[in-house]
Length: 374
Ligand SMILES: Cc1cc2nc3c(=O)[nH]c(=O)nc-3n(C[C@H](O)[C@H](O)[C@H](O)COP(=O)(O)OP(=O)(O)OC[C@H]3O[C@@H](n4cnc5c(N)ncnc54)[C@H](O)[C@@H]3O)c2cc1C
Image (tube, rainbow, N blue to C red; front, side, top):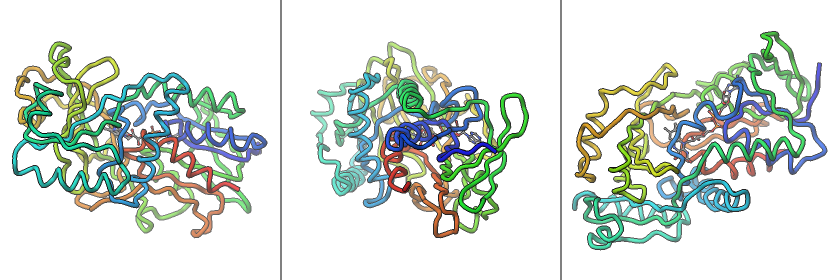
């Protein structure tokens, strides 16, 4: 059986960032990344808002807060160094009426506690100067929130990993994992449909929506240890270019309770399009269709702060699915990034529940994983 030092499952932005980081750090070790699709980023990493978050909302001390705040800076530096398309366009978190002002106060405090040092309070006049078409009575400006071309980011990470000696094997689907004396035997379906196995010392599971399935393959009960994923769909609608030009920044109302999502908000894509979403619908099937009937829900949510939009402006755009470990009705759950030594799985590193802000945190997640490897 072929042997490698490090095996990564999943070529989303997280797996690619880890492959890039580890192949740079451990240039004397062999590294293979297995991905079931024919190219990188075919799942959650290309179905998201492409926002470089500042790290405002998450509980202080959580991985989501720490990795996002540091990840934000690292990602901007990385984009600058490698000329990846991005824009630090800033975001407004708005209060649509007086009742929402206390929510803004607590968001501001939370952001400051997390180390987001550049947040500013804006009054109605200041909002009007920045965003004359937005209806809001008060806002927080987050200047370090931005947008990124996630495809370019992944392309660069893939290139770096390969330049540094990593082997990325597309059309390789992992279907079995066995714990061996000091390592793991991983069985996969190769591009010709045959089963083959490879042995590794370190196994890094960043299989996104299927990361809990990979854990199950090892005979671990994911329900007992709280690793079960509850996929949660987020749909987007977009509007015409003329109306897109009426807003320059990302505009967010205060987030939903229990952080099920950040609420239907307005994002701008790198090509200047105004998009709305994502909503949050727990689902059992992986299906990326956008339900046209949800246009009404979007219109109702957005009409409260963008009165220039009509119902007929909302066009179905795309959908992504969050790999949530937070079951419906549960409270906040953090990213799981764990070297499973205490469960008796030396060398197994699991990344589970890497929903938002996973894109922003991709480089810092990779740095964290590097810290486990000896
Ligand atoms: C609607 C939505 C909006 C979001 N918005 C933002 C945002 O604005 N900013 C932000 O920072 N984050 C955002 N996120 C989160 C971000 O997109 C994710 O955290 C990130 O993309 C996760 O990357 P990943 O590599 O872990 O997962 P994925 O991109 O899902 O990659 C996992 C890979 O593993 C592969 N795989 C799975 N099982 C196997 C197997 N058995 N064998 C081989 N390969 C396998 C899959 O094919 C896939 O390519 C958003 C997420 C969603 C859903």
